[in-house]
Image (tube, rainbow, N blue to C red; front, side, top):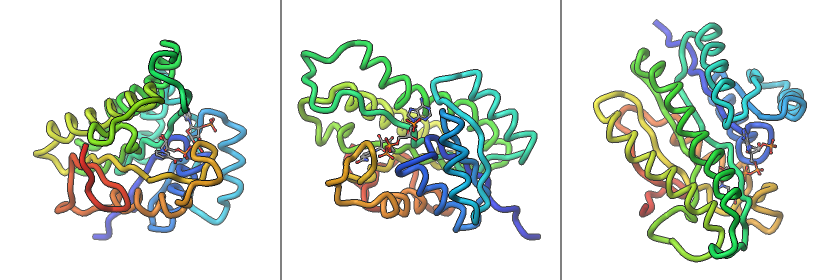
Length: 233
Ligand SMILES: NC(=O)c1ccc[n+]([C@@H]2O[C@H](COP(=O)([O-])OP(=O)(O)OC[C@H]3O[C@@H](n4cnc5c(N)ncnc54)[C@H](OP(=O)(O)O)[C@@H]3O)[C@@H](O)[C@H]2O)c1
């Protein structure tokens, strides 16, 4: 019997890396739910992706009620979730010293980059468990790697280091399941966040991310990658 095509959610899909991930997942045959916190921006993105099988749903990853609503809608609409791309992110303290960063900025950054992904996993892993299949890709950054830790942008670094820890903790607890969770650093990417000088295109970044969204049962879990190669935490 033919398997129904995979259902995937991408957070922060209205622009940048998330937008390209939606496109690439759709090209690979997934039924993609592009989410964004701003409805007009998300719908505009959908219009530009008219040729793809991509559906829109509003989601601010800091809104726990919104996450529950999306989970219920996914269950009603598809009865399953196979792929979760925790992509939504903010970078609010670029170049700011750890001695100057406002605590509110740290909290705001953690709310999106860490708690957002945490709440999404908590909402959707039970559905993946029911279906015996799941692939989660947390979009992280070398700025969150202990191995590469340095000064400045502490809020962003701490949020991504926390996301990395979450990836390992969840991977360990999911070891006996067919749910795989990995972290990917997309490199320095030319988006609103990365700026125009960045050498990696959003398309290239998306290809790396989609690779880990589609790994088979023998693929890795609880690992950190950049340009498809494993890197140190
Ligand atoms: N670009 C780089 O060089 C680079 C390097 C390493 C890691 N990353 C990571 O890659 C991911 C994507 O970044 P990007 O470069 O594509 O940046 P981007 O162009 O700034 O896009 C960020 C996306 O996240 C969304 N977002 C922010 N807060 C949200 C919230 N509360 N709920 C839902 N969506 C929210 C934004 O929505 P709005 O349009 O509404 O703001 C936007 O869609 C991020 O996790 C980032 O940390 C990027």
